[in-house]
Image 1 (cartoon, protein in one colour):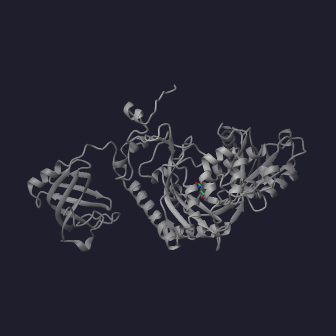
Image 2: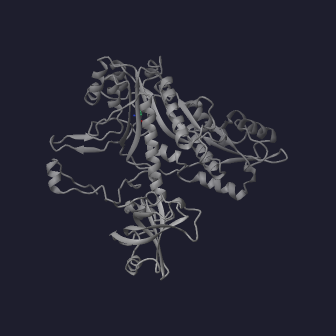
Image 3: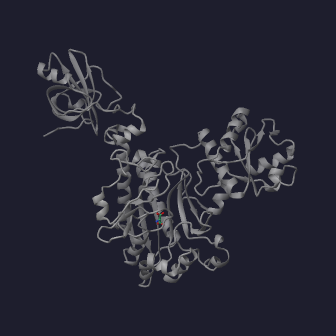
Length: 588
Ligand code: ASP
């Protein structure tokens, strides 16, 4: 037997027990006559003591040769520690070692394997297996497993069946590029890895499974933004015979269960139900379709009170919009200038910012005093909800752009002011998304969610005249400024689906070639259905009170989509290319 106990287990009540432990050497302290070793495994750390007077010479000698991360097994007696460590669960005891076996030696690790490490991100990723030995990483993975288990338990209890769908498929458009896999047996043909199991889960509904879920890998070949992974995990779900309301209720249930089970909390902002907000309202109030509602700073539109004065910039703007920053009057001139510089960076690209200080004596002082009087500012304050001591920040320009910029400023300031609290959870449904979204690049409409999403009842006709106005039966679950889930009620008849493909610019032939199987299936009694998918990586990070999803993925890819540990992607040899009927020419 390698061990009788693990390294997080022994307590004062175990004193005098003979035990066998195994694990990794985290640290040794050699005082000559005594050697201490911190022995680590997944469960914790137990201190070993080798003592000249009580341990054989031969064993002590071996102990002095131990290096960091050697794998050892010891036999010994649990004894009371002279100097106890109240910060460690095993801090009352130590093991007086009588026998030491070195199970495997280790090179000196490239970084320290402790809670605080000296290893930079790249190095830790290259030696991820060593990084995983560190408690913070290990705990995150254990936490993830706990969340996944809670999801499975809850959904199974609710009657959902977990079904695996294939990875080698044909393209499923979710708005990204596909990763493709060449087929050896079918020359010149390719599989695509699923961007999501969307079409398959719909087919499972046609198949009568009624309630499906899957914790599943999805693959999207997107330009990598910070903290996105080319492969990521979804909790993918679908239900038959449902309306939007049924889906919202079902998955509100799941979210509440997770918050309770994992974090032990009931969300601060929801009585019996999560609040709901339409997409239009979210854009108007927060400039964002995934607003963080843990704090206020709602937008106030100022066109009516700020235009038609002598300030040309506002007069020409499609939208003049402001927020009140609580306590912002305390900002120094320099701090405000820094904010303006921050807004002018290319990432945000604002031309500038107008600000109004709301002084304690009730007066206002602004950067545009030349054009406006105190009465004007009082109106701005009323609309933005500014109180004395606040700072009103105003941006202007084209509507969408000004909103996006002000939304970025709102989040930036909230972060600065400590309003984004890790231990507060404020979920929100955003509903009534537009069905279509104009794409500047291709100069046409794209499905905002995906082409299988149904328009709101009675809005199909609008497609012909006002496509941008059509609203969809689509919804997102937003948590603390993150979209953690999104889904829709689907089209379930061939005619509407064909019409949708037509509006999206597919010729009937293209639609048939790509999605004929789905439209065919719709002809055999497809039930009304809808679903949702949650991003598990992000959900876990948020529930864990952290920002970076990489920290919750065992073997993540870096920002260039590389696995630096196994060094992938990598070229393949000629023989393999030949078998795949491929000839690769690298364009420089
Ligand atoms: N397939 C969708 C997605 O990956 C989710 C859904 O509509 O259920 O975002």
